Image 1 (cartoon, rainbow, N blue to C red):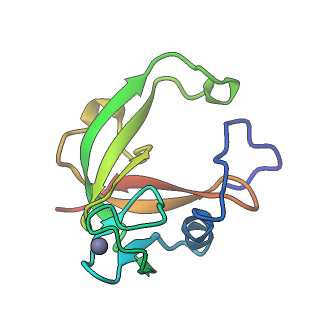
Image 2: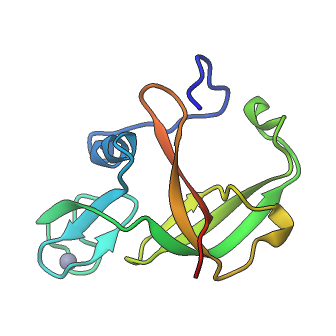
Length: 139
Ligand SMILES: [Zn+2]
């Protein structure tokens, strides 16, 4: 769904988070995994939040998780969302542990449930930025 003009706010990419965004462009969900204790974390950080090691590897994740929490916005705070209210913003807990803020697609807002199993889908917002969204999957 790439568009010439994308009206919603876009993320600011830093050198630290660049591998995350590069992964999404390849349609892969990649996060940092500690070489010492195997913890995976998000958002990107220069060291492991569990053991403080600076040794980590960008690793491809399953792209699967469960809905932990969500809200439904009935007001558009940015013009780009005006055509989409009411829309959801969900916190998905990945099977590997980290939690991502995202949108759920392929499900009516009224049908969202806590613990609902979901899987990643990739939305190409612009030529440079692909966003991670999630849709329901069989349990
Ligand atoms: Zn660690």
